[in-house]
Length: 497
Image 1 (cartoon, rainbow, N blue to C red):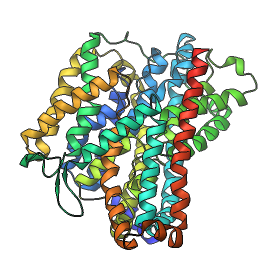
Image 2 (cartoon, rainbow, N blue to C red; image 1 turned 30 degrees about the vertical axis):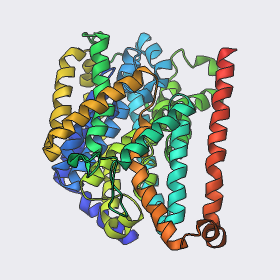
Image 3 (spheres, one colour; image 1 turned 180 degrees about the vertical axis):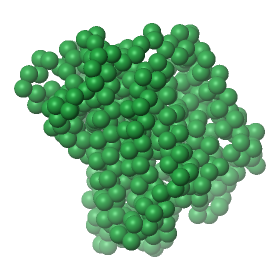
């Protein structure tokens, strides 16, 4: 592993990789700075660009968009009280209050430093952690892999936004859509209705762009908000070393919390930010200052939500399980480049995996440089009217969907999934379980097929006698769903009371 790590770091030190990572960061911060435009939408729209680049350039470009978008959401959250992304909601508790006190520059710099530290520390931790986990993953057989995939689906469905039953329903829809096409084992057509164009199945790209980008565009048009927020600029003195030092404990606490949350599929930045904020407030000597303009109230959520970024790559790269909708888009980039994340990826392309992980650290360092130099510019981006950007985003979505395979049917799927995603948003359904079900169902089906072959038809006896770990993991699935349903019912009763 050490040799592959060193080889991977040598692969990533390329001028074109650094430049494209920087370009991704700028685009990510730009989108994150625009209220109403999400990081997921930006990555979905820009995903096709990575298909035409070398994997060591295209995927770091998307990683730059990812990291830039998560940080960029803090800019409007601090300046105008509108979170640029969901990950920055907790930043609105203290950011606007600091702006009213004339300390917006301090708040923006604190958000930058906390974000960079949380992201860098978690990314370095991921680089050293992922090797041992990959060694364990390589020893997992088809029965264990099938249960891990099923358990991941259960976690994603039960922790998605909205009711558990809604998450399960969307998961089932995603699994059904994945069944369209040919059986991966017997090559038998399923649910194709003799339509030749869909015998190869539904492509992931139009689904991702349709579900994550088109609804955002339609909601922006529906809201008829043409004007951006009032133009502003950072005010007040710069953040001092003593102020940053006083927040060091808060940043460290939020970093480990965010890193731990990032390794769990389906949880994500929003939960990490709120937990980091709550922990900082609880540990503060004077918690009454929170919500009234406390720098720790900016440092805590920003360190936590950015610390999620690194560990989310662990389940993606070791098991092929995306932890959230952003890593689902990254999975699409890997697959398009001929790289299928999972245990086999490490044995075949270990150096490339470490190279891509190394690009995460490079992105963090570039974020520090670009963020510090361009804070005044991005602060003015908040005022750009969305009416100027919606048509451009739509053009990128349509063009990106078509140029990948030059298949007009992909445009039909783009519209269908876009309208479906729009309807789901209006009815408070989270589409993330649908995408996860679509992505994870084929490897799950293949693992189940391999298990049937290995067991000779006696699956129960095979698992009990030879795979007891599988049985233990299998018992966690109903327990998890019952626990999630109980928490949801408890929250409903509390809200009603």
